[in-house]
Image (tube, rainbow, N blue to C red; front, side, top):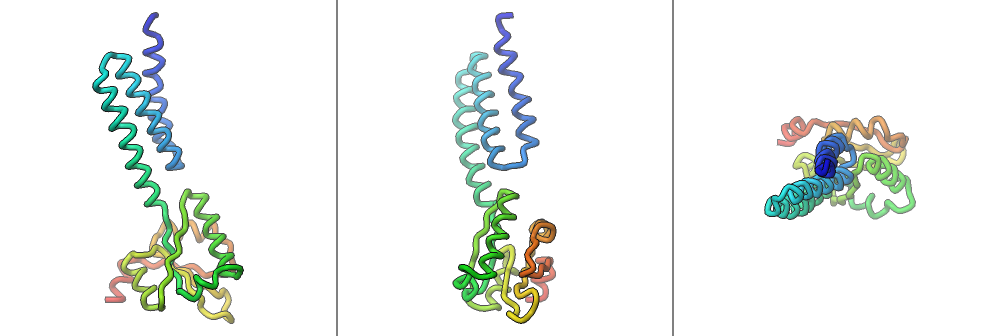
Amino acid sequence: MNDFYIYAIAALLPLSAFMLVFQVNPYHALVIRGILGAIAALVYAVLGAADVALTEALVGTMLAITLYAVAVRSSLVMRLGVLKDESSAAEGNRFGQLLDQLRTILRKHHMRLEVFPYTDMQALEQALVDKEVHTTCVLRSPSQAPPYHTVTRVQRLYEIMQTELASPETSLTYVNPLDAKENHS
């Protein structure tokens, strides 16, 4: 009966591990991973393994969380390639509204949008083939409807935009990166 607190603390380990596995938001998962490591360090300390508890606290919690945070932050980005003229004129026009809508959609999936301007169409297409950008968006012709054409090489981004992008400003196309590379070779 005196060791009830040990059982209560130890019961938190599988509970926090379960929460971690089923967490959708990667940032929340980082927090839960930190809690899991802290609970494990506490269990080790209570059981008398101070050296293991210290190692778990330093390496298993602090270092791992820092490395995971860097990896999550850098991997949840959609790089959008555009022509330099369109990116400079993006404020207050239809292209700016399209970018705002893309940012809103990506935010729902815990992602962010980074826009990369290119000087000409050939450089933009090559950036997509070389996997420098995930998606390109170019102005076809102001008289054409829709005026913008968006091409992506990432299947999941295509699925997200296809279902959630309600803008009549752009048409959407998916290209297989392997097919695109063969066509440009």
